[in-house]
Image (cartoon, rainbow, N blue to C red; front, side):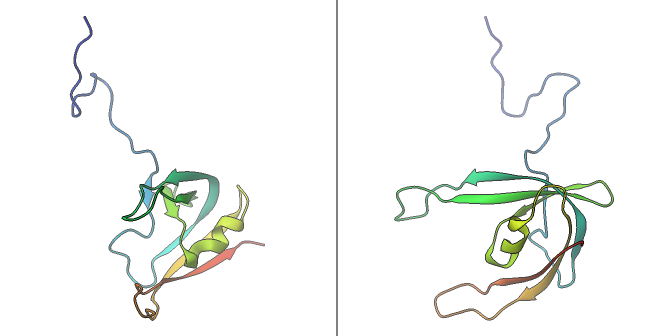
Length: 118
């Protein structure tokens, strides 16, 4: 008979890993936070539907290996859309520039600088 597994139990010798890596810039982003590294690939995530929607939308995620070897996931947003036009292997520089001005009925946009090495 198979042993019933609990959510927190892992076999001896294993450790949990996350699927996407640490998100950049993270919830506590400060103006001027930078990320320099190489795009290692792109993923897609189907978000659950919001209230009133029939199906969730597809969100793109860029995987970036920072120059220090740490892996980051960068979720698509309007301010980061130029990043998603790059190819795997592109060397990129990202900087969080703060919050823009909110339009009526909307949240303030997050502003970024996105650059690619020549």
